[in-house]
Amino acid sequence: MFQIKEARFLSPDVKLFRIEAPRVARRQKAGQFVILRVHSSGERIPLTIAGSDPQEGTVTIIVQGIGKTTKMLNTLEAGDTIPDLVGPLGKASEIENFGTAVVIGGGVGTAIAYPTAKALSDAGNEVISIVGARNKDLVILENEMREFCKETHIMTDDGSHGTKGLVTDRLKELIDSGRKIDYVLAIGPIPMMRAVAETTRPSGIKTMVSLNPIMVDGTGMCGGCRVVVGGKSEFACVDGPEFDAHQVDFGILVARNNMYRDLESKSLRDYVDGGQSKPCSASECKMERAIAQAAASV
Image (cartoon, rainbow, N blue to C red; front, side):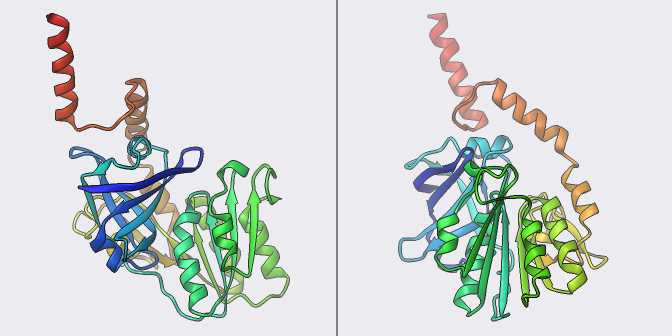
């Protein structure tokens, strides 16, 4: 069991968890992730490690409640436990002194980009961050990014915070200004990463994206996280999760991620309609129903 030491919302449906996992905390590097289950019969979901404290023995993850499992996870509080947490998985981010690095985070992707942005800064890069969200309430880690980034640009779809527009609007402005940009990292929704790749392609700027396709075991054995990069099949859990954005086949990535969309939507509807407020295993739920039925029959 892995105990939650801290749990707090950063914005609506986006929650930060600090979890006791000493072995993971000691080995974690920027860009790596964990796979966890909320209960013993639940699905395995990959979540990028936003940070760690080896001395305290904790790792930090930031979760956006979108599907059933992430919404269940976001009902947990400090003191609750997570039965399964495996990691660190995946290859660490490529960290070296590139020169000027632009790190782009879209929505909760900012949490994934944050540790790599800090590592790039520690390696001597001049880091420029672009943080995008639909509105002001969904902007996360702005102050944390400003601590070590030379510039931080906030872009919101509705203009409620920062500048109205897309992250690619600001990226294009930076490129067109003639500033020398040596490296770009983009993490967020697939359409955003794809747009960033096309924005930097004409200039030949080294551009990386972090892919989070369907994952099951995290070891490459199941093949569920297969992506096509440079015309070859790769496995995001062991060969990634970061890949050359100009080599990624985003069309295939979108198609694979949509394979279970209907089932995921149904699972979420059943969960919400069932009015469950806390996750439980199948056996626990059956036990609760049996107790309720026995009490009603007395």
